[in-house]
Image 1 (tube, rainbow, N blue to C red):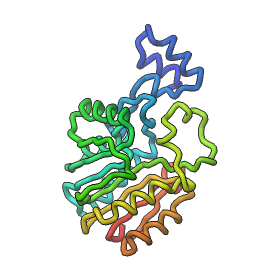
Image 2: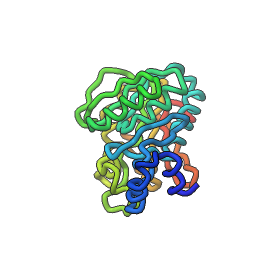
Image 3: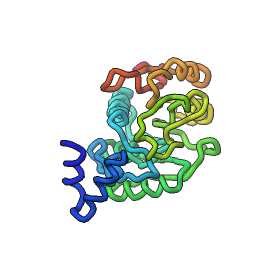
Length: 239
């Protein structure tokens, strides 16, 4: 189905002309329609949140698989940089779990809360800057698809419509992995899992950070549907 056909399918007739203009100007079709399907959930999106992608669906799928393999039952989860809430909502709808999720953007958390209500799940969404985030809680799973694109890397032109602070990060895109591991490595239960979406050139550098903060943990890097190294999993057990 073409993008034009998608608009005709999902937009009312009185909004179709404007939608086609926006599409011709390069705006992503997901923003024009206003929602996207993500791991059997319907997620509303606007320019305050990153558009959920297939790669992130695969992160959720793999994470659920590893939770089962590690025998982590009813996990306590922290989702960092939640955006639209898609990861948290997909996990909550598919496994028994308790989920907290943070994002620096008030507007993103508003979208995430609306999406949770629409999908009939309860998640504790909080407006928090990871740099200032403090907690005494312990988690079985920390999951994040943080901003990870280096500022000097060329990206798809259409990403200009998305919140740039959800895409780019300092230190060659490694900044948030470093902050997450530094601040939260002591907030993990003994049997635990960390799940990251990553840039395909970052795996070995993130492994070095894991060695610094969680030297006894095992690290596994996995590829996405396009054969790019896209996911990094950290656990106290071999996976």
